[in-house]
Image (tube, rainbow, N blue to C red; front, side):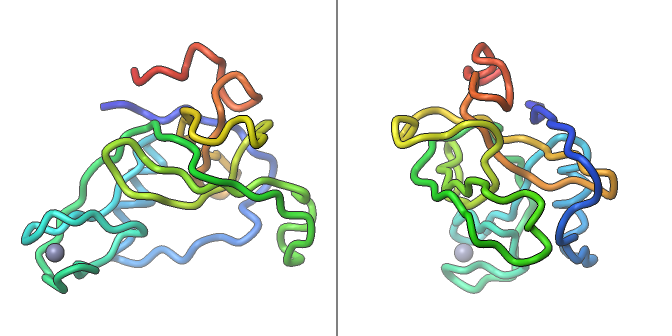
Length: 153
Ligand SMILES: [Zn+2]
């Protein structure tokens, strides 16, 4: 299993997610260093965020799968005007990442990111807050994980 790199964050999550019986495998997986989501057994479509029915064929036969810890940066934006809960973190970057052999997702970018990084490899991260994990990504060598971590382990 390829565990995600961890980045220690200060304090509690600014807006803690609600954990339900269905989403618990996602959050326990993330706490253990694994990014997971659901895949349809009927048609093979991967959904992110996890869903209890297929977004393509509406089948209810979905299973949990582990996602790759790496991907490519499709796009990003830098957020300067934020809701109050995130004020202490602003400005920050939000990236759109194409997970290797997986879905496209949106997450916090840790470290430096610029337009030169578009279509560059990124590493997914566990952002370890005092009250639980969130996920994020970084461009290796730019403040999240060392450059040599850019290759899939
Ligand atoms: Zn399906």
